[in-house]
Amino acid sequence: MLDGVAGRVAARAALLRSVRRFFDQRGFVEVDTPVLTRSLIPEPAIDVFVTEAAHRATPLYLVPSPERWMKRLLAVGCSAIYQIGHAFRNLEEIGPWHADEFAMLEWYTTGEDWLAARQTTLSLLHAVTAALEPWRDASDLRSAPARSCGAELSLPPEVHTVASLCQRALDSPLVSLSLVELQQVAGQVGTEWSADDTWEQLFHRLFLTHVEPTLPRDRPVFVTDYPSGVPTLARAAADAAVAERWELYLGGVEIANCYQEEVSGQRLAAVFGAEAERIRRSHTPRRVDWELPDRFGDSPPCTGVALGIDRLLAHLLGAPSIAAIGYCDTAR
Amino acid sequence: MIKASAIDKGTFLLIKGAPHLVVEREFVNPGKGSAFVRLKLKNIQTGLVTRQVNKSQETLEDVEIEGVNAQYLYADDDSYVFMNSDTFDQFNVPVSGLEDRRHYLIEGDSYQVMMWGETPLDIKVPIKMALEIAEAPPAERGDTATGASKTVTTATGLPLKVPIFIKEGDRVVVNTETAEYVERAN
Image 1: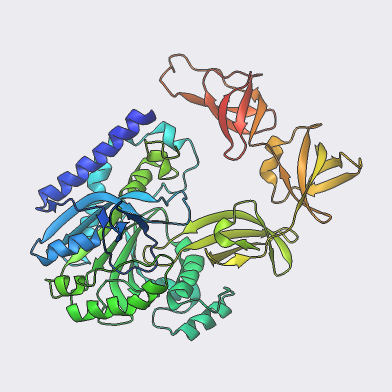
Image 2: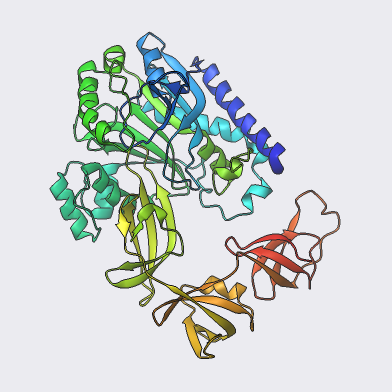
């Protein structure tokens, strides 16, 4: 039974223990990197928390993910590392699946590629599910209507490319279209768009309106091969229109994502350069770790996966939100 | 005008000249993309449900509405019948889109009806209301584990999960936003 604070404390501890056991048994090393940082990787869509030290003018940021630090560790020869830490996103609002601060599991390995990482992720979810078995009938969490619960991990996952999902829902694969062609598709399916929409924004309007709500909720779903028009640090596939990247959905909610990491120093520098201007114009300008392409560039091929601990715990316990599995009164 | 990120469930928007009720809203921020608000809208006049996704920074046209104090009289097949407390005029509020309000409307009680000109759009109910329990199964012997609960029905027909000590005829406080039991009313 999971009743009250003590139960939620125990369930979370069991999850964290099982994650550590899983990675320790596979030869990964746990790392513990700083939460305060002086520079970031360029991710213009993420708003960061900015703070400052009392006697220094340079701003400090709360990390939106440990990616920058972990890639620097990979660059100096660490080959299989994981971290359970807190990440901070200066979101405009809090919702059932969003919070300013959340627990994130992130792991990197040179030992397998992004396709093999799907099986590893499922194995991890099975291990965590087994560890949470005593709390599965958490009466005080299931009392509210639960939107997210229901994806049975025992059912085989579905794997779909973004292009195939878009083709089915919109009669167009979207991924290789120009912005003007995306606008034409939007017009055909009656989706309103704005003249200042970037390619990424219009793609997401269409994807979030017509595709994401149709994903199966009763089993794990991997959505793969995201368009290169959504800028990330994932490696471009042989078909350059898409990147080697997947997202795992459970019950219609993104739980984890994976990249085959871009390790070409030249291409990383190009991505950083292209983002520089967008960063300067973004809501919260921030300092970028311009050394990262040099340091991390030309490292051995590696895969990175990030997984939302709170979302996973809420899902496995059938809770209606990540707030429902918390045990600190963050409202005060 | 209202910013998409400020829109809430229950907000009224003017979409192509027609008033729409926001029946669902969800903040979505794809892992690697911009922030959006996903809306499920119901056209008040046609009942047609549509979905749209707006960037959270976009602005939309909201509807100017005015609250009118009115006494709830009764419900017929497709409307709730009210009497304006100032003018004593009777008027109908269509049930469509406001089905869940029937659990919180008590004959003879006063409510605020939200009007768009002459068109009633919504009935405001208090966030917490005391409701009488009409049907309650007796607690089973031995069922004393902490947190044990049972399902009862209020006089207004709302099924409710309550602690086992609640009996028929008790009045309980209900959160009308979540349709959940709060506490026993004194």
